[in-house]
Image 1 (cartoon, rainbow over the protein chains, first blue to last red):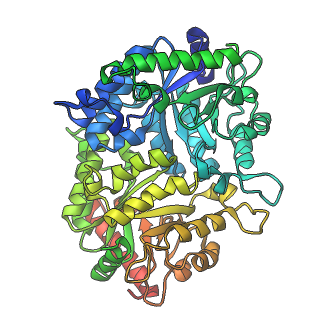
Image 2: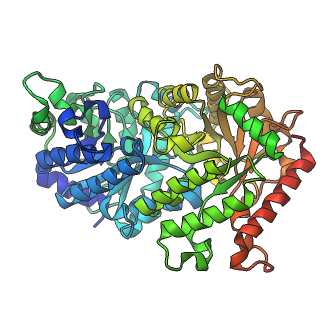
Image 3: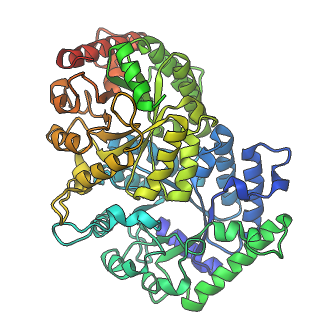
Amino acid sequence: MNFADRLIAAIKNKKSVACVGLDPHWDQIPAFLKEGRTPGEAILAFNKGIIDAISDLVPIVKPQLAFYEKFGMDGLGAFWETIKYAKEKGLLVLADGKRDDIGSTAVAYAQAYLDTKGEFGQYIDALTVNAYLGSDGVKPFVDLCREHDKGIFVLVKTSNPSSGELQDLRLADGMTVKEKMASLVARWGQDLEGKEGYSAIGAVVGATYPEDFEKLRAQMPQQIFLIPGYGAQGGTAADLKTCFDEQGLGAIVNSSRGIIFAYTKDSKYSEEDFAEAAREAVLKMNGELAANYKF
Amino acid sequence: MNFADRLIAAIKNKKSVACVGLDPHWDQIPAFLKEGRTPGEAILAFNKGIIDAISDLVPIVKPQLAFYEKFGMDGLGAFWETIKYAKEKGLLVLADGKRDDIGSTAVAYAQAYLDTKGEFGQYIDALTVNAYLGSDGVKPFVDLCREHDKGIFVLVKTSNPSSGELQDLRLADGMTVKEKMASLVARWGQDLEGKEGYSAIGAVVGATYPEDFEKLRAQMPQQIFLIPGYGAQGGTAADLKTCFDEQGLGAIVNSSRGIIFAYTKDSKYSEEDFAEAAREAVLKMNGELAANYKF
C-alpha cells in the first residue's frame, strides 16, 4: 500500500497525528539506565521504555540518526534494534537522516533506507531527504518509494532559527528559495499519489514559521507535511490550521525532547518515571491537536 | 595542527592533490573478493587492496558513507575498519556524509565524525556538510573543527547534472544561490585560517562546471576546494586552473570510480589486478594534474 495511505490509516487507527522523535540526547537519559551498559545499550533500553509507553497512542516514531551515529557502531546497533522494536510494536518508522548526494550515490542511500530487502530498510517506512543537489539527487529516493511503498519527506522550510538564511531568499522571478523547493517537491510527488489523495513524497515544514504554511500548502496540496518544532522549539497546535484539511489530515506533528524527556520538565517525576512521563506528554499533545483538528 | 595545514603538508609530502573516493559500488567489486565473505567483509578486503596500492601516492581518501550504510551494520563495520586502516597507512580521511541538521542535532553529527574521542571521529580528519539549513546548522561542525583540528567541506556547487536547479538560481539581489552559499562559507571559515593561508572550512565545487570556478574562487579565497567530478563524470585537469594558486595549492581533486574500478576500463587487467590498476590510474591522474600545476 502507498506510504501516504499507510500513514493515514495509522493516523485514523491511533486517532493521532503526533510523531515522537527518538532523539536520545545522552545527557538527558536517566542515569539508572546507563549503569552497567554501553551507550548503545542504554539508548536502546531508554527507547524501548518510550516505545512501550507510547506505541498505542501515535502512528509513527522518528529516530534521528545523528544521535546514534554519535556513538559509532555501538550507537548504530541501537538504531537498528530500535527500528526493529518499533516495527514489532506496530509503529511506522521515519528515519530522520536528511540524506543527500548526487544521483549514483543517492541510489546507495535509497537502498540503505528504503529497500525492503535491506538490513535497515526492512524496518523503515520513510526517510527525510535534503534536495539542495536537485532532481537527480532525489529521483533515486522517489524510485524506491514507488518500488517498495516507502515515503520521503523533503526539507522545504526547516524549523531552526537560521533556516531563512538560504530558504527565505527571494529569487529574481519573485519566488523564494523555499517556494521553489516546494514546487519541485510537488512535481516529484506527482505520480505517487495514494487513494486518500496524498503523495508518498512529503515535505518538512517547521512549526516555528506558521506564516509560511498557507503559501506552501497551496503549492503542495498533495504533500503530507512533517512538522518539526512543536513543543521544545515553540510551535503550538493552533498555529498549524493551514496544514490540515477538513478531515484533519495532511500533516504529522513531531515532538522529540518535549515527549521523551518530559520527566525532566516536572518535579513530580523521578528518573524512573521517564516512560510514564512520556506517555502523559503524548496524551497532552494528542489532546491539544484533537482540540483543533478532527482525524 | 589546523586541518588545512595538515592537508597541505600531506599534499607536499605526497606531491599530489588527488583524493581517492572509496565508493565501493557492489556490482563492480571483483567477484573473487566476494566468495565466502559478507558484503562488509568483501568491501573491506577491496578497500584494503586499494589503500595498500595508493597510500604512498595521495594525501587523502574519501569514503562515501552511502555505500557502507547500504549494507546496514555489516557495511558500517566495513566503514569503521576502512577509516582505521587508511589512518594506519598514513592517509588523511575525509568522510563524505553530506550531513546536515538543525543546531542541537548538528552537534550530535559533529560529535559523531569530528570528535577525536569518538569511535568514528578518531580516524576522520574532515566531513562533507550540506548547509541548506543555514548558519546554526553549520556552527556545531565549525566549533568541533576548531576544537579538534578537523575540517569540513560545505556543498556550494555540486557536480551532478541537476545541481543548477537550485544552486544556479538567481536571487533578487543579483547573486546566485551558489554564490550566496559561497559568501556564507567564506564567513564561517574566517577565524579558522591555518599558517598556509587556507581555512579548515572548505567548499565542494564540482569539476563539471569550470565556468563557475573564477567567481567562486574570488568569493572564497581561503577555502580549499574539494573538486568532485574528475574522471568518470567528465572533469579534466586543464579545466581546474582557477582553483589553484601559484603554488599549486588550494584544491584537492577527487576521483572515485575512475581510480578504484580502473580494472574494469581496460581489458589488459583481470579482476585480480584491481589494486595495480588503481595504482596506475592514480599515477596517471597525478601526472595529469602535475603537468598543469606545481605543488
